[in-house]
Image (cartoon, rainbow, N blue to C red; front, side):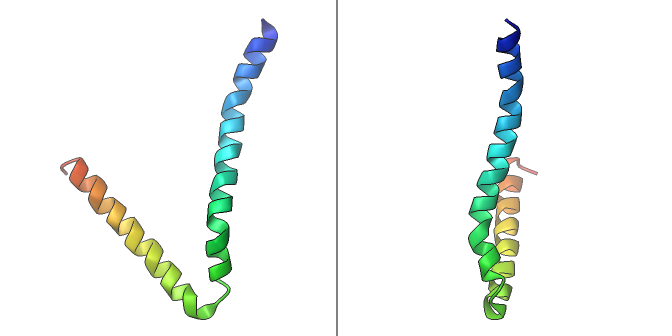
Length: 64
């Protein structure tokens, strides 16, 4: 029974490490875009517009 709880306690660590790995894999192409000076501004603008867009959507969903 001790092995069961030991295995259960490992799942949150596995989830967090898998999530961090997924985020790093998704952001890797954007890191390469930062190497090109001309595209750097577009990437920053994209992130700002995306964040603002998500903020507006969540604000309207919550009726704030």
